[in-house]
Picture 1 (tube, helix red, strand yellow):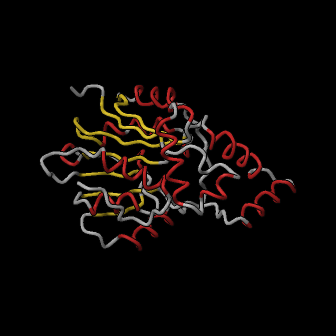
Picture 2 (picture 1 turned 90 degrees about the vertical axis):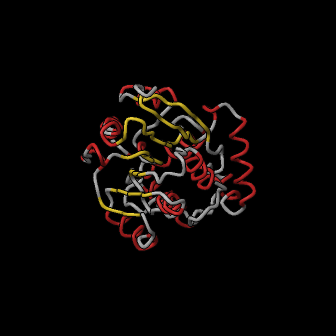
Amino acid sequence: MEFINYTLYNKAEDIKRLKFIIDNLPVRDKKQLNILEIGCGEGNICYQMARYGHKVTGIDISDATIKSATQKFGDTPGLTFRVEDAEQLKMAANDKYDVIVCSEILEHLYEPAKLVANFENLLHPEGIAIVTVPNGFGPREVLITKPVQRLKHGDGSFSKFVKKFKASLGYRGDTDQSSADELSHIQFFSMKQLTRLAETSGFQIIKKKSGNFVENVFPFSMLSRRLFFIQKLDCMVADVLPLNFTSQYYSVWKRTDQR
């Protein structure tokens, strides 16, 4: 099916990530898939999948994001949003999902292994998980996220100056993905660490792809955030670079006991 962006996403990297998710949904004789998005945030990815005719459940632990997602997309046929802790979610044998989408979530968790360990309970035996995370050792996390978070969590005058400076440049602190109150990155994954996380939970990564390169790295971001073609070029550059040099990892997981 031709990819059409139905969402409110307007950044090249968000659209590229969305297309990766859609392109990797299983094709089963036009069968409607039963899909769970963990940490659905503002609901854009859920809405896109529902527009493609699938039954989609979006869960998030944040009341604010579920309220926002419901206001935007809650009337969409086949789409349900609810506040839920994915680590505690249990499924009956006849209720399991064909696909789990976990996009830009694991980096925010103190114990991501607890969530990933529950994938097996949530998925059909032939089901897959589509997981995206920042490259914890890529340009974005090393040059921006880590130093800015250290300053943000300080209480000195320089920390306050940085917060005001970011606000003056239009950086709100939330994202198009989520309006949750706390979006700090706690985990910083290399691909080797992400692979180990999958394997310890009974999964293997069967597909890997990069997201963007330096689009979100200041001061380059001051230009790219205003010019879509620069964003798109940055994503294209990431596609030809070694994966570990880029700022984003996209991956598809399947259970190791699948044939």
